[in-house]
Length: 202
Image (cartoon, rainbow, N blue to C red):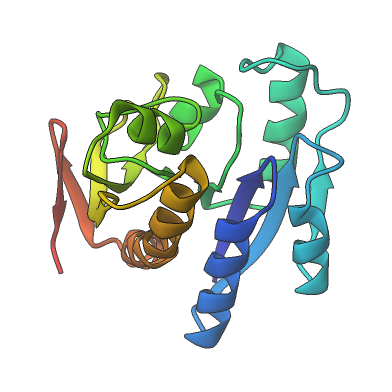
């Protein structure tokens, strides 16, 4: 049994998809959900699926986590025997010591074809830039912003999208499929890494 922590800050749509798909395929995993936002919509979604939820106390606004935040998060991860961490709309930068503790066991999904449109609101960036093809990327997490080795990508045609929200809706459908596939391959140890190249050994 693999112990998985999903970190969220908002709606939890990717979290919900990961958990539902894992249950449907009866993967040997159990989940906890950790959030920095006590008002995150994803909290109720997790509770509705009988997933334990942990709310990080006293989090302040901003991208970076304080040493106290870092300690609280690490305690939750250790106490729940966490094997892998999945970021699903988590809007904070993890500190170096957590990344080093879980090196190549932390993954994130980002709504663009990285390295294009990294950072916040990638769908808006892509729409305003006027690109015709965007997409989504699953990558390992390092100490940068969306800079870790790329695991999987999926291109999405957004050439006829009329708004940022339409771009988001089109990409998120592919995010759900891509993220689950990458997660399943990860826990089954199907990836190897040479420099920045992630190789699928399936």
